[in-house]
Length: 123
Image (cartoon, rainbow, N blue to C red; front, side, top):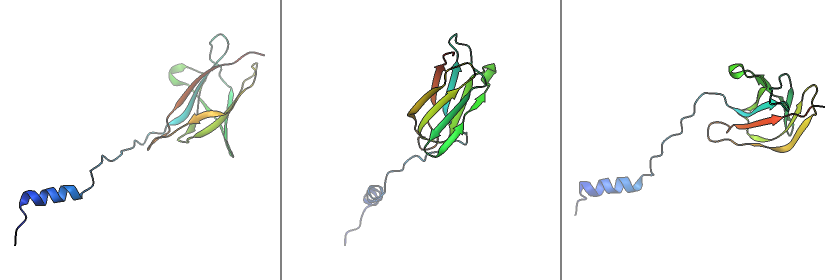
């Protein structure tokens, strides 16, 4: 009876195993899917606006944040992929609506942020 050499055993072992994949390691950060900067016709920030995101039965009022002293920045769709409609309302400005055309995708761990810079027209 012939014996199988050590090289042959190693080759059989390696050929019979699936390739080792690097595991995906996700961070614990919370990612907003949509970041909107709202300005007026002069490029000045518009603070206090109401930005409403809608996808099907889901409705969210976006939150205004003040990163580094810059007002007029709004965030929403936190860790929520989808295709959204967005309505922006602010005193002294025309209401603006984007119907079902803001797509937010996700990878294995988080949403992929979409950034918009929008200028409102005064009434």
